[in-house]
Image (cartoon, rainbow, N blue to C red; front, side, top):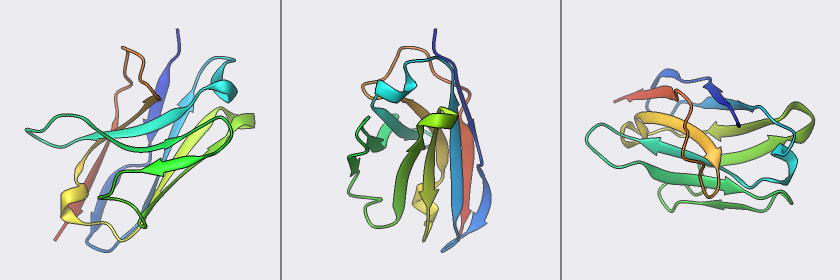
Length: 114
């Protein structure tokens, strides 16, 4: 069973930056497409960014040009660099395979103050 451990969240002001990390257990990481997802209070979980095993990336329109997803297969880790943060980016951020496994990690809270 794959385990997912997210970290790097915090409280930042509008316009600030954060870098999220997700450590993934298991030897199949390098062949998996991975995604970052987020869930804001009272809203459904949404897909934010994806990266394939070949490092092709895709982004939700709401974060395009501000967020960058990357991966380090040697460390079984996927990252999300978030710049120019806005209050509407406030959410719990999760990583998972894309498409996602049924089991999720604990997520990491990102709060952007106005």
